[in-house]
Image (cartoon, rainbow, N blue to C red; front, side, top):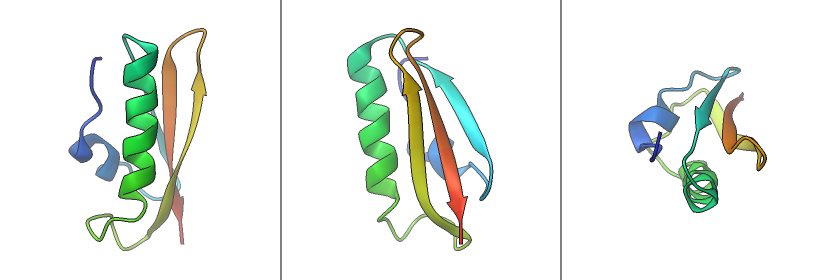
Length: 69
């Protein structure tokens, strides 16, 4: 996957997570930054407090977790 979209992140239900495989380190960091920005967006679902990320530089994967309220 080259890009994580707004729809991908906002589609993660509160209390669950989704893992994305990225092509480059830059794409991984971009997805991380986007998830952080959407944590402060009025577009995020009402039951989501914020989005948290964990990633593996070795595998170029990022897991985005929707933290529930």
